[in-house]
Image (cartoon, rainbow, N blue to C red; front, side, top):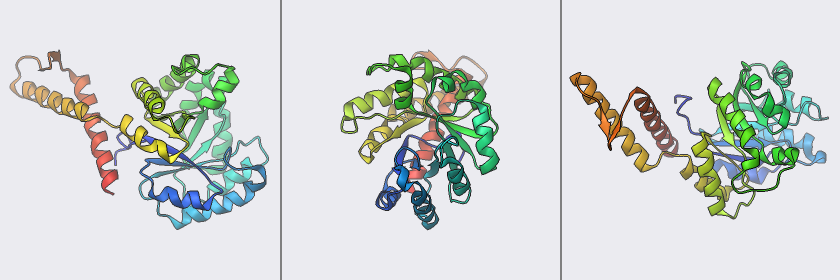
Length: 285
């Protein structure tokens, strides 16, 4: 599957210390799982959580879901042991919390080697250094930590997330400049489907690839929001067909629904169809 079209619509946090949750995740229709050794695991469970998670990943059963392990920060008592442990796990990505600079990624990569790294973007310093962080050669993705960011910024809650727009925008620009995956932060009210749908729509409009989730009940909403709609797929097909017809004849300008279709529109249309096909393949698998 082309990495550019691979879906990351739903990225669910799962506690790395809970065997029942780890088993349940095998059957959830999510695109990726963040197996959490950090916030979701209490201090007295940290050591056991590593062994529990390593065993669950070795057992397999997660299919084509991307397996991401969030470790504790390297400035904590558990971070270095986590990093050494994840290097031996059947994981696709290691996720580092509270990344503030490229030096943080250097320190992790010195332990985890070639394992791809994702960065939690959740501090003002991280926002200001987003371009430097995104350019790191081992980094392949970013995750917005909007709860921690709101705390650091001392913002009030607003449904439109206006206080965080500067930070979200800086990270989006950095990620897109480097061709990285970037997923939006969590929506805390997991029983509020309407609010979640609105925030997913906002994130999709901004350019995020998907949404991090805290509860399985949120998966269907995120999957729908970040997938191409039937209308978008239909438009993409008609744009490509119209452009190819004009290109073959060598005459005129391609027009669909009263709007001119240019090369950039066709490129977007092809990406839309590739994403739709990738989602269909995941569902079939």
